[in-house]
Image (cartoon, rainbow, N blue to C red; front, top):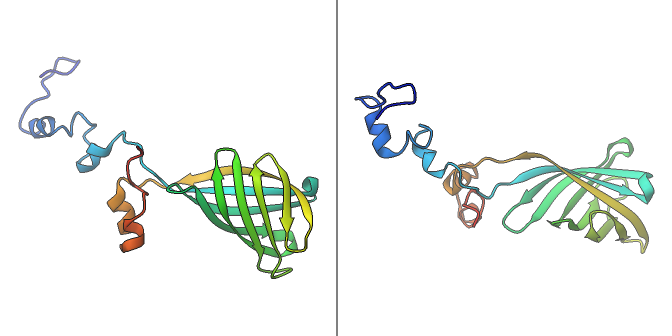
Amino acid sequence: MRSQSGRSVEGPTLAPYARSGRLAAGGRGSHAASAGVARYQTQTSTLTVSAMGGAYVHTYTITTNPCNDTFIGSGGIASLGLNEIVSGTITGQNISIDGAYQTFNPGYTWHYDGPLSGGASHDSMGQTVPVTFTNAPTSTSNFKNHGDYVSSQGGGSDPAHSCIGMPVS
């Protein structure tokens, strides 16, 4: 076999790689078999909620589970000392979210279900508050395979039953 420059690429050092397919896949070793395969990965994002026309802007760091589109996160309004926990789902351009204040007014909760572009949230005080959302991804995991993810979690039943690191079908 000859390269484009006309030099031989076979020989005692390259032949085993050419036969195994690792050279054709980029010479990256044993994980080359998974090269180019899309895999389910977790994603970290900054979720911003603008309430009451921007009078109150809540910012959260969320982590999304690709197996069921759920997310969990925390944040709030730092300038007010407001810390919140949020959870929900994001599917396409729609969000369902529940928030619970941890400080400032503990016990206060709110909920929204609708388009990211906005609508009316409802809170534990019986109020309706107009909100809009932006979701900006900041990082994505890069698990080479499912075993890589399970190992990163310390093993166990929950990680083993997750789709993270599995090929997208």
